[in-house]
Length: 349
Image (cartoon, rainbow, N blue to C red; front, side, top):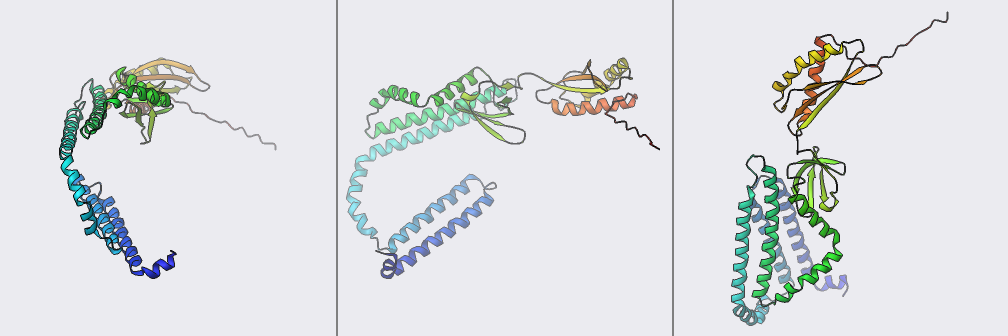
């Protein structure tokens, strides 16, 4: 039947269907816009209510469309009533057992979440390690409980799960051959966690990307840099890395003085002034040291100063150290040379 013929015979039904679809679409559109504005402010149960309302609107719309086109719900209900009642009576035990397994699984997952949620929340020397182990353990428990619950529910409904369990070995071999990279990522994840390569909260550099580890899974690791960029790395790809969180950091500042300046005097005045840095920056854990002359440059004698700080706290200390060095040298009349160009003009006249 062509569209023209359909509209000629069922014009009212077509228009009514289009109107219902448009009204439902507009309701859901404006509801979605409204929810997006309030999503961050509202608690989860209010959002759940709105999602339920959306479901009800879609269901009512489908029922209205079916009524417009003459669907007889009463006849359909009477045709399946006896079969449905018989099926429910025969399956009441399985339904109760399934409900019990689901509730028990949810209860166990809730207990596991409450147990491991605050692991590593208290400050301490092993805080990062505890947080990492807690997240990985919770992830393993979720997978384990989900698989066991699925097998038990299948058994309740009469499915023989023993052949499935016996076939896991063969299936594992097939999966291993077809998903070698996936298995490699899982094994690498175990080694990263249990050999303590890095923990959640550590600063690492992998493949030229430096940032803080925010999440460690059995398959992937998530790293966020100081700009907020997120890099997700497969654990099997983490072959070499630099962990900046294992030891204290070193702030380094190298500067130059004029060749005419007194090197011994410069070192002496710096040794007197640099201890002030301990009072200005609490993250400094040792008095700064003047290493001495490190380079004889074209227009300057270069001297290096180092300072040990708390882990990854050396960036701000370096800025403060440069300022303190400049102020100290200015106070004692010690010149910091800079490139100069001498232009000679010769009068031809």
